[in-house]
Image (cartoon, rainbow, N blue to C red; front, side, top):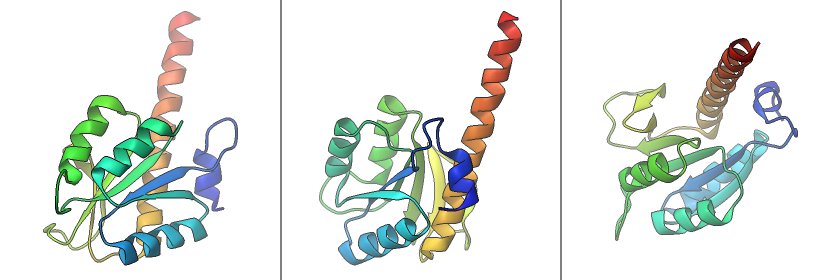
Length: 151
């Protein structure tokens, strides 16, 4: 497990968990395997509906990486809105071959971050580590404010 993954896991020391949502099985399994090699616990879903079930049934998922365009029902944008409403603490990374930028950007896009296709699992892992580090820093800042408020 990388230093950043260890550093950003919660107090119990658990691995960060990533849910990969994509209707293309080869791409989904390649990304899941690559992220697993970077030290993440990885779950997979082939649709938004399956992803929502996993998110409801599973205790905690740190990151969702979802393709924007998926045929036959809800897509990544629908999942973004659902996460914002029901799981706002979950970090979302949307992937697409249609983004205008040529490289990954760790900045907000609607309710998440974007990762243009094609990308390597190592690029996804780097973006995940950046997002987890930002979340950990924000949580520490908020906790410091809370302690300062009550002291």
